[in-house]
Length: 194
Figure 1 (cartoon, rainbow, N blue to C red):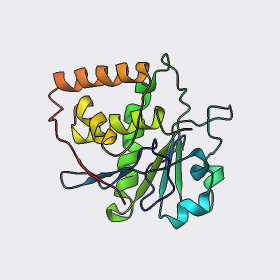
Figure 2: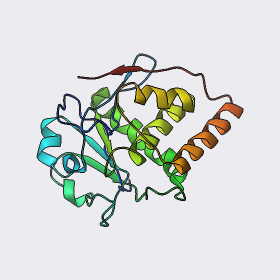
Figure 3: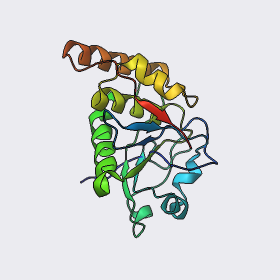
Figure 4: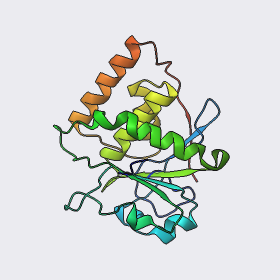
């Protein structure tokens, strides 16, 4: 499997940034979405801390070396037992993040199913405000049949998020596509925090 981005969910994390989305599962009809309170890019760069928190997978939506990215990779997590996937997404209105919706949702699904459903995935970007919440919303839409409005509201119940206008437009386009295909049911998942 090609690894290229991300982190999601740090259960029990008390020092997380209010902008970082998380998901814990498996998320099914009886599953839950878990929202972290304070997450910073520095958490992603602290493999020991992630291990201590039981994180099994990291999805980085800001893979890269520039100022607006988080410089981690498969090699960074070697020997930790953490599976890494990075996506080189830019937080600009022109960036086509929708090209990565299925890839990200697949990674989150596999992460949550890990170890008989005991996997924990930490989904992150630099600030946890735009790119990573966009991916978690897309995941909820694609895998849990939530419409965009409810998926965004589900995350906003627990933390501040602010996908940029271009990302919101792409989520609306995904919503239209899924609605036409009859793949949305409007369910709101249970939200839990520690």
